Length: 181
Image (cartoon, rainbow, N blue to C red):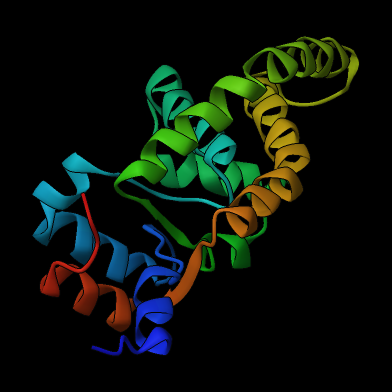
């Protein structure tokens, strides 16, 4: 019996990944999170340039609660003070981590915890001396930390073979059950 080594090699040497970077509009993300709640609850799904940037977006939501105002007002205020620009909001990718890649992301975050904590202290000390609206100072610190983290995070994605896909390709993968979770 002859074994076709080409088939054997292809079958066992494929690089599988369960990290997806999805090009999606805010409306598509809202559709996905509403209609695929189980998938979102069982995986790490967020819309930002990096995992660290999710802290910045959470901080903006927190400001809205503290200031007793709308998130739209806070975002417009952040735009006015050049923390973000309007185009950025519409172009944020959806990151999805499933399977073993959820663990890899956890280790990535754990490895960067102490260095990022030190950076936060330094950035916070600098923010206190700047002439910047006090309600946005914490958000500014998280934004600056996220900006520092993006190149390192992109390197992590590349090392772990993240697959960039369109929203339609991603939805088809989820419906087909081809992403392990």
